[in-house]
Amino acid sequence: MSQGCCHHPSYLSSSVIVFAAAIVSFANSYNGEFVFDDAEALINNKDVRTGTDAVAVSDVFLHDFWGSKLASNTSHKSYRPLTVLTFRYNQLCMLLLNYCFIVVLL
Image 1 (cartoon, rainbow, N blue to C red):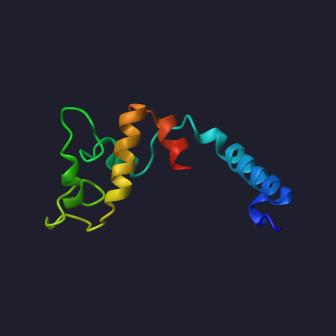
Image 2: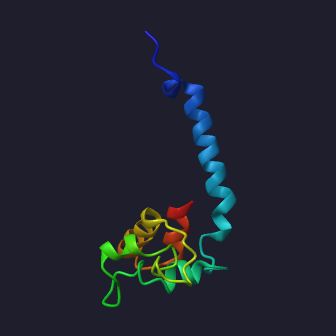
């Protein structure tokens, strides 16, 4: 009886090699600063925050990726609520540490 491709030893060893290569190739960026649009998407975005200045979770579905109301003329209309909720959960668990965001987003 066949075990399928996922249980074949060469498939598993190949997967481990690819995973290890990805970890090693990004290792020098784990302690890096937020760059480009990270500040707007992660730090200044009230939809991502979990403290006293955070918006209600239900409001995430009314805002664009950057935290602006979708109905606003200044909104980019980039609607990604699941991504924003992932950022919010990550911030809740990791307290907005760069290292944690970078590792989880890889």
